[in-house]
Length: 238
Ligand SMILES: [Zn+2]
Image (cartoon, rainbow, N blue to C red; front, side, top):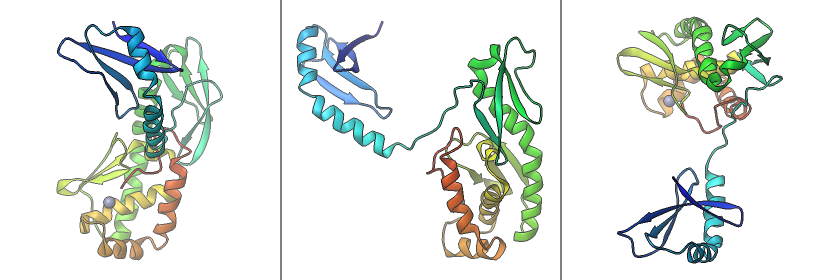
């Protein structure tokens, strides 16, 4: 069982080791607080020592809050809104519904039994529903850029909106499907342009200027909108 220590409403995990002779405090990337202590440290001594480090801990945590981009996470409760292609639809959690997640054109209907895996159900819904739509948009923009993608894949790309793989395959993040078409078009054009020019530089901007003259505005819009949708943040890259 994990040993914890609470000091002024901060919770620290205590990791004891027989090989240790000194105390150490670490704040890991996710902001978790860990005290590394010798096997036999007295809890009262630990608390006293930790209290003397609080200023340093608060400084570290404040830094992390500043650098870590905020990602909105849904709670999957009735009344919450989910976006698809820039339009929002309400969620209704339904007791005992047979289907885990269904969209009836007006609402998302989530079975209460499926709430714990709701994020997976939504991801699958977006991929399944949006894939064909995305492929059609890619076709349209391919003509504008005079370039042909070999294949179009929709995946979870973490915090990338899209990427251009080898052999002419372009990948798009399903999270993109929450955004309006004009913004998605920018990401598509960006990845297609990479088929002609792999680097971010004047040549890539020239291709975009030619094919999507207001791409800079759309790119700004992408950043702004990314804050309002789930599972995304405004520093995601293309
Ligand atoms: Zn790029």
